[in-house]
Image (cartoon, rainbow, N blue to C red; front, side):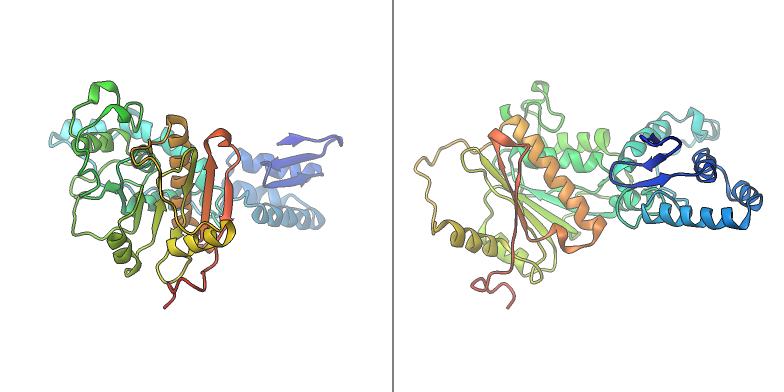
Amino acid sequence: MYATDITDHYLVGSQKHAVRITTPIEKALITTLAAGADEGELRALLSTLTPAQQAESEELFAALDSAQLSQHREGKLALSKRFISTSSGRATKNSRPEMDAAFIQLQNRVGAELTQTNWIPGVDDGGIEILSARQDILIEISGTNRVATILYSLLLASGATQTRFAPSARETSRLVGDLDIAIGSFTSNHIGYAFDKQCEVIRRELSLFPLDRENDYLDELSSPDFRIHCGDIDPERLAIWMNSDLPFMHIPTPLADVAQIGPIVIPGKSPCLRCAELAERDQSGVRNREPLLHNAESEYPVIAAHFIASLAASQILAFFEKQSSETTGKVISLDYQALAYPQVVTLARHPLCGCAF
């Protein structure tokens, strides 16, 4: 609740969602709701009001609903099965919430994530259902650069438990190397470790939700719900992806000190990579690029890698949670010298592309 310049007038909510409180009855109702009153206590308070005051309270409740400041459902997290001790005494002890350190840790971490999902338009259960649903999304990452590695850790820590690397993602660099230091929880102590095995260690340590021991997260036969490729994409792979119904995101290799994210592509339904290429050609007049230095550095600096991976992870989760077209058909360009000012270009399906046919 925020006090205003007008005496006894308050604002309730946040900078984006707020309701003005102007009467003592409204303030009493807000205070009662904020204290966690149940339905019975609220009904008892409403029964003491005059008809005019009850009408005033109805207007307040409607305003709270419109500003998305009220919850109508009690959400419950659906968690995978955790290991339960075969010893009945130990199992009973560990099942007590006040004695379960992992449960307490989960509560703390989930609370922080809910500060984002709670404010997604249409949410009326505190964001719990949307956050819990992240466990069901199978995301597959291909690429060997820093952004790919950071994306893996970010998505795991945000609740996308089934995030994995594609089987052939690290064929050219199977071991943790110098450029992996300070990336995705790797340190200099991990140099020389098998990258894929260390990623499974990271999965256990970073995953927001407990891992299901009966689930094979690396099952190559299971089709992902979303694909991400970081770096130059093989034309054959792109052709296969465009002939499927699976959405994907491309994060191309940066050029000098400028990087890009996207677009997110739904094959046959949204602008594709060729559409983006043709749109850029129309705007710049450049028909082809050929690097003069074939061994030029193409890896991201550390700060830019984290920033770009965070933006990409946000776009990917928003794609599933908002279920709208606002996340597709967009290319985000980022200048390393001005990361705080990304440029967003909205694409249309280019008439010369033919991806709709």
